[in-house]
Amino acid sequence: MTESSALPVAESAPVESGSVLADQPIKYVLRDGIEYVLLGTAHVSRASVAAVRELLETQQFDAVAVELCESRYNSIRNPDALRQLDLFQVIRDGKAGLVAANLALSSFQRRLAEQFGIEPGAEMKAAIDVADTQNLPIWLIDREVGTTLKRAYRSVGFMDRLGIVGGLVGSLFSTDEVNEAEIEKLKQGDMLTSMFDEFAKQSEPLYRSLIAERDSFMAARLREESAGKTSAENIQSVKPFRVLAVLGAGHLAGIERELVAQQEAPAITLAPLKANPPAARWPKVLGLGMLVLIIAAIAYAFTRGASFGTQALQDWVVFTAGGSAIGALIAGAHPLSVLAAALAGPLKPFRPLVPSGAFSAGTELWLRRPQVGDFDALRHDLVEWRGWWRNRVARTLMIFMFTNLGMMLGEYLAAFRIVKRLI
Image 1 (cartoon, rainbow, N blue to C red):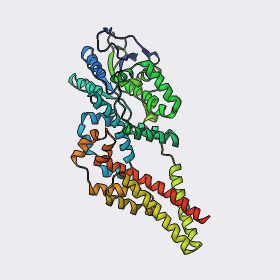
Image 2: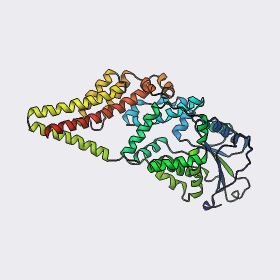
Image 3: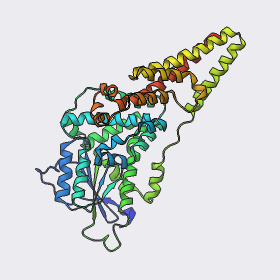
Image 4: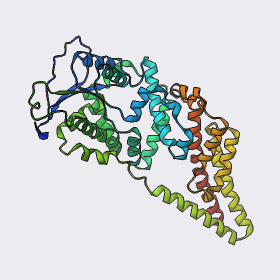
């Protein structure tokens, strides 16, 4: 079978009406002598866990692929991995926002999981556990979650970025409960298709980054892992190499389509999808331009007289120090961390590459270093919005972000006030 001859095939075995597989979304694709059994799941579904176990225990497979990247796989295999999180390193590398976004995403899933009494990603863990028991290779086929978030965030404009952040924040304050029947409905193909079509209409770049690109990526990873698993002799064999792929149901149709359609070598397809898009230059240019404008305005104010210059300098100090301090205060920072934020704010011209949040968060870590218990409780604390202020790990991340947000707001207010005085 050549690459162009990939095609969907009928189910390998009939599914009885009373079987746990009867209502599960399953697709079968035969390509290059490999039979891919694609199982669509919901990540907080008992039925999905049962379907995974039923397939692996009643049918023969040669490998198991899961919709996980290396970092998410490690978090499942090693629940204590959060204890190893180096917050100093996270803040120093400017990854506080990315880590907080990951925690916010997982907190909503955790809330659903606790509502239904099942661990998030339980179907993936079941697939991994049974594969280990049967000595089957495990293929991690999803793109790194950090890369996906960066590509999604940088693919849209300013207003859509606010929508992303607002959605993450909104998920923390949401108290809506989801019926378990509604969770199962997420695995019905027609509903999924219409839902994603609507999503694409609202924000095509987001749909492409979060869904379509990952469909292409995971299909290419399946083909990459499958390379060399068949030969010219056994391609015609009655019993092909079989792979069970456990996927979020939203990716089922896309991955089936990509497995049939892809013609390029997997490495060629994967290379651009793995790349982190370059950060937009305009925020840095705008920020630098604003800083230069303010410095020039203050200098010009002194040419108008010492009182004008002193007042302009005072406006800069008050607004930047106040904005940074208020941001840290809202995040629940220690009084000394708030003071550190206030002292760092006005010094921006002398620390262009170090944000105010690094000083306040660093001081917070020094004063109230997270304990082992904070890391252990992190997943459960973040289920409700109050937990972000209660947990020292989450609170430190918020202090970093809120301080920077307050500093940015204070800078713009200072610029407005200074220019207004000079006009």
